[in-house]
Amino acid sequence: MKPLPTLARWFLILGAINMALTVGLGAAGMHGLKAHLAANDPGGWFQTALHYHQLHALGLLAIGLAMSRILPNRWLAGSGLLMLVGMVLFSGNLYLRSIAGIHVFHAITPMGGGAFILGWLMFAVGVWRSRMPASS
Image (cartoon, rainbow, N blue to C red):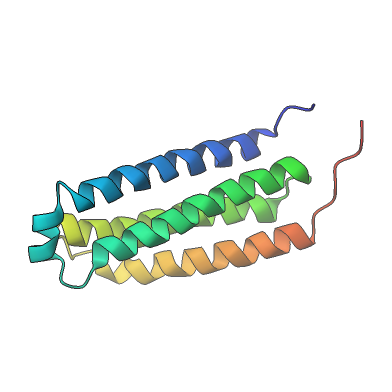
């Protein structure tokens, strides 16, 4: 069995860490922050941030697995980077808004959503343009 390509390994690691982070944040939201969120998050920003964070952590895992099965390419690498950017800009902003009441960065939240969309489109192109590795 061949070792994983470096970038595939990083996306798998980052996907797994982000999945663990979403479980921890979800538990904190349900237990430690429940009263705070009920009073300060009427829009449900925390749940929205958590949902998108979880989906895109799974996306990183999918990218890592795809890169381990096919030859990695710049489209797949860009896809993973855009998903990470989306997590920070979209979910990170919604976490700030719901937990800390910080609203000054709200204008970049849609940029995070755009990064998610572009990331998924790049993933599709990366798989479309992929080649299988040579058999050993």
